Image (cartoon, rainbow, N blue to C red; front, top):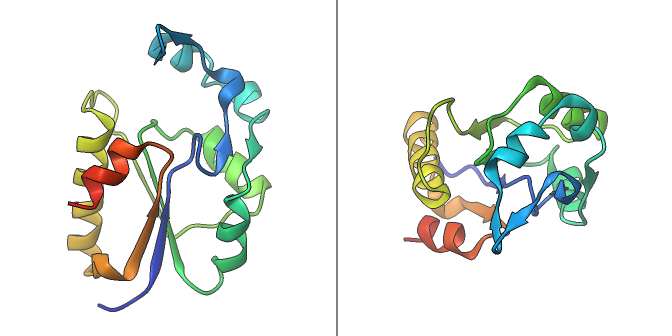
Length: 137
């Protein structure tokens, strides 16, 4: 199908959640991240400038979220409070420890297969180069 669509990552791309992060030797402290993925802290996240593109085009195109985090009710609430609508959210299943690039490629391949979308009609936005490289293969 030739339907144009956009795919947005959340953290670091459209949402500033840096107040919930801690780095150890330049790498994300995943246990700290998980401990801070609570409603009160998620509601302190803010929007990054790219979210304006999402807001401006969400009535014209299908919008998908493709994130490496486990989506919680508070994340859905945060998006709704900020008026960010989406067609679907592709997120890490509980217990999945795949690297972000492998996870996102798998999630997107499944989405394209199920929804019969043409990948060439979509634009993927992510703050991590390794995710962009993996998806563009």
